[in-house]
Every structure is written in structure tokens, then in C-alpha cells.
Length: 252
Length: 252
DNA sequence: AGAAAAATGTTCGTTTTTGTGCGTTTTCGA
DNA sequence: TCGAAAACGCACAAAAACGAACATTTTTCT
Image (cartoon, rainbow over the protein chains, first blue to last red):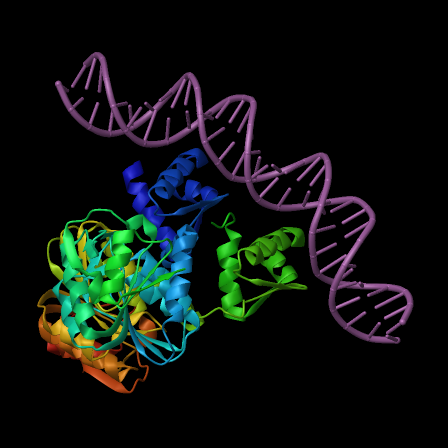
């Protein structure tokens, strides 16, 4: 029995039993433990199993781990922005949360709100908010974008058009000093534009790393946004623009 | 993260029994109580259990117990059914995967297919398949059902209507001996019905625990299904029905 | 067939885990 | 409230598992 034939069977056994032991597999395949160790090491490197002393187990709930890792990755600024943003959202209203790590931070802060109807095109946000039993979560359809768990495309836009939101929280990839809000993904821009149309009050949540960056697609102007929540002071030009446009700026 | 083969099983036992004792586990694993204490201390440090004198209990915040229990129920059969089912699905085609732990097992077996377009209303399946870069995943919209990660309601049905599928894999809650396919949730029945309409070939994946059970809502008849993949022989009556209707039955 | 490559087995020093002994803390009944 | 029994955690030694390096076998390609 060659190595290529062993690996799939190891996975299958692991799925069936929930765990595998080095010795058990060695006996099952009639090879030395060392060979099994090599197999397990490779499977673990591929992320198909999780190595433990004496054997291996199934990767424990991929979703939860992704979530907790992400949470650890959360920079202080994003948590602060999320917290500040959540304070502007009352109980018992309808909210849209867009794609983005910053909006995920907002979702985490909404865990103790009540009576919310949250619509999102971010599968991670859906997972986070599913922990709060006082929130109804609606997920838009769309193509799953692996990189960030976003749901994009025509389906997403279609779904959003069927709602009216009291509040919407959007993120962005870049923010020009003249008040233009930009994004890397053209498809997502369509979604963001629709959200702005359908919402009573729009919040932009973006940390200072976005200031003065460049991105190809235009979402909107700062004038289309009601509140901008960030962590550091804006450039003079941008502050002036917001003032004229009536956009309230908040520092977390 | 777990460094011991024992830990996942301890969690599993804790979920099933609600609590675990040091002595009980020591006997179960044939190790000394001290070793178990170490395990429990570490699990408690990770927040996965709550330590009490003489053993440990589930942390009060733990949710979704029903779902994880159900997922572990009959696990071996589900993996086998998933594997058998995946063999009927070729590369480069469009597939719908419905809600259900058995269909999740199918998704896990599709990880090495190529060129698939998979549409699903199950957020867990979306997460599983996002690991396969050769599969395009589309998620239907809908209300997020906390209990099992399903997306249900009108939005889901609407989305599904926009597609035509080469193959669809559906699950069910119960299966009557006269060939009627049943489900607990009326909303989900609507979704399943739509899927059957939109699909070239329909697979029903259900393990033997569903045989002869009862559920209130009718999805369809076995005659509407092209293949039925299960783990144990059907009742004589049901087998006869399938034969007449031309439904092929496969045992994993 | 013969050489190169891949996979497997073997050996050995290192790391991790487990068992044991013992003093301390908690629980529970009188 | 007090005292015994059980449970606990710590420290150290023994045992098991580990990985790296090298020898040997098997497979593959020319």
C-alpha cells in the first residue's frame, strides 16, 4: 500500500472515529509508526487533521477557530471603533452590516443589543451574531468570496433592494482627502451604493490606516454618509469637507 | 489546539452527559485521575469546560448543544452516505446542497472535486466548501436559523428559483414507509420543493434513523427523487415503492 | 535493465506526557 | 464546628512518543 492510498483512508477513519492513533494506524496498514507519523505530519501541514501526541484528531470546528483567531487579530483601533459605532445604534431597529473587518468589530459589539433585525452580506458577521438570541439575522445571497467571507455580486444587490434599513454600517478600502470613499472591488461598490440608497442613516467605520490610500472604485462621497467613526484625526481638508457636508465625525 | 486525544472525547462526553467526573474519565481512558485532572484544568483554561470539585461541567454559555449532538449522532453512517453520494456527482457541474447534517457530510466529501458550482442555503456547508479553491460557492439569502445554520424563508426560495441545477442533494427529518418524505419545518419544505423543481437529478441522502419516523410537513414523495442514498436496507413496502417509481436506492 | 527518485524502515537523542508520592485544600457528615 | 475522607496541585522520575539522519527497499523513468 503506497502513501497516496493511505492518506485518504486515514482521513476517512478520522471522520468516522473522530480520532486516529499512531499505533492503531500502524497496525491497520502494517507499517511502522514512523511512517504513520510522517503521514500525519503532512496531513496536519495541509490542515486536514490536527496533530496531537499519540495520534491526530479532526480539526476542531473550523468555524470557531477562524472566529477566535480573527478576534485575537483585532487591533485595538477596530475594537474601539466598533464599540463607538455600536453606541449609535439603538435597540429594536433594522441594521445593515457590510463586508469588512471593522464592521465585524461592530457586530461583536452588538452582541448585547436587543430586538435588532440585522441584514449582512458577511458570513463571518452572521456567525458572530448567531450567538445573540435577541437578534434576527438575515443573510443576503451572493457569491462567497473566500478571502474575507463576503457575499458579493448581483444576488447580494437584489436582496438588499428588498429592505429598508434604519441604520447601515459600511467599511471601505481607502479614503481620499477630498472626501471620496473608495474600494478595491468593483462588485462590492455596487453593493455599498445600494445600501446607501436603502438606508435612513449611514455610518462609515474606517480606521486611520485607510486615510490617503488609493483604490480604483468609487463608492460614494463623504457627503452621502451621516456619521464617520474613526480612531485618529482627519486631514484638515477632509475635516473641512465633512463640516460643509454636514457629516458628523467621531473619534473612538 | 488540543494536545491530547482524550480532550475531544471528554468534551463529547460532557455534551452528552452534561457533566464529567474525574474518576469516571480515569476509568474510561484507563489512566490515573491525575492525568484527567490535568486535562480538565487545561480544558477549563481554554474555556471549553467549567471545573468543579470531582469533575467538570459545561460552561453556562454553551449554545447549539442540540446541533452538535445531532451532528455526532450516527456520524459514521453519515460519512459513508456522504462519500457514496459524492461519487454520483461528477466534476464541472452545478449542485445544490440543502440544509442537514447528512448533506454537510456530502459537502465534506466534495472537497476534492473540481469545477463545481455549488449553491447552498446552509452556512456550515458554505464554510466547509470555502476551503476548496476549485469550487465556486453561492449562498442563498434568508433568515439565519441558529439551531443549524440554515437559511430559510422566502428569500431563500427566491434565490433558488434563479438557478437550474444539474444535481441537488436534499435531506429530510423523516421517511414514511409509504415513500413520503417529511420534515419538521414547514418553511424548509418550501425550499426543498423548489429545489426539486429546479433540478435535473435529485438525490435524497438520509440515514436509517429517519425510517418510519414522523414529521408534520410533506416535502415530496420518493417518486420525485432520482436516487436515494442510505446506510441500511429499506422496509419491504418502501423498497417496492421505489422500484415502481424508478427511484434507484444505494447503500453506503 | 539500470539509474534516479520516492517511500519506508531503523536507530538514537530529545521532547512530551504520564504515573507516583506527598503536603494542602475542599467537602461532607457527625 | 470539627475531623476524616476525598480531591487537589506540585514536583520529580519513568515511560512513551517524537523527529532527524541514515540505510534499505520499492517504484518510476529512460
